[in-house]
Each structure stands twice: as structure tokens, then as C-alpha cells.
Length: 164
Image 1 (cartoon, helix red, strand yellow):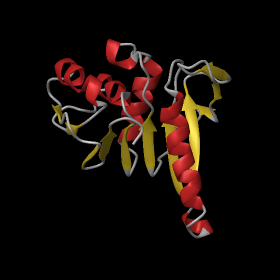
Image 2 (cartoon, helix red, strand yellow; image 1 turned 90 degrees about the vertical axis):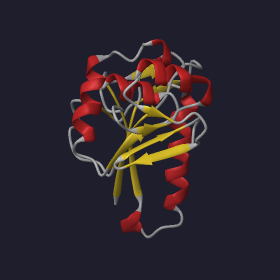
Image 3 (cartoon, helix red, strand yellow; image 1 turned 135 degrees about the horizontal axis):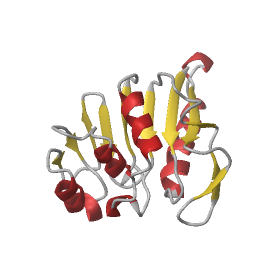
Image 4 (cartoon, one colour; image 1 turned 180 degrees about the vertical axis):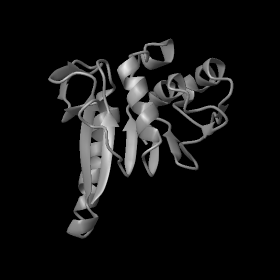
């Protein structure tokens, strides 16, 4: 079983959560039971939170409850992240500690800004949605932002543009 954690937060882009969850769910139809993906949504607070489109999402556990290694840990994007609204210290601390324990970690779309605030983009090749790539490069000048990539892998770090 491969474990996947997706960090969510108030104002998260619902598509950045639902898209990957659907992909892993669909992949489970084609692999042996012992190779399936187990996906968990994690957030700072228990209970429902509102996505940017108003949809209610409920995490499976809080960051405090999910302090374990995952095969893959991702942070979803959200429209407010490029404007500096990724400063919840609980999210940033979880990203920092989880990244050191995972086989792979990364972001979906503008989730790269949360990784940047957590100090996880320095000296790394990264990407994000093309509309925000210049802003990512300006906010995190130590990151090597590729403005025209759909996804990038740099060692254990994976970043993507859009909901890829």
C-alpha cells in the first residue's frame, strides 16, 4: 500500500484536492490490492473547511494526528497562496517535518507557494501555474522556477502547474 497525504486549508482550490484524489482512486482499479494508494486529507483543524469555491471539505486527520512517513505528501493550491496567505505555521511546520520523512513530497499548482514559505524550494527546480510563475520566482529567488513546465521532479520534490 502506498500512502499519500494531501494538505488542505481554508480557501484551498477544490480541484487541486479532488483531481489528485480521483486520479489515485482510478489508479487503484488497475493495481493489485497490496499496491493500492491510500489517500488522506490533512489540515490544521478538525471538521469542515471551505474551499475557495465554497465547497465544504473535511480532512481525515489534523497535522498533529498525521505525524508519520508517507510515500507521497502534497500540498494543494489555492487562489490566495500567491499573495502570501500561506503563513499558517501549523501547515508550514507539517510540510517541513513531513518532507524529511517522505519518499516524495510536493505541490499541486500554487501549493508551491506554501512549500516556498516552508523553505522547501531553495536551490530546487520547480514550477507552478504559468499565471503565477513570475510571482513564485520573485517571492522565492533561491528557487529555480521554470515558467513553461507542466510538472518537474527535482530529487524527492515534485511540483506541478495547474491540477497536474
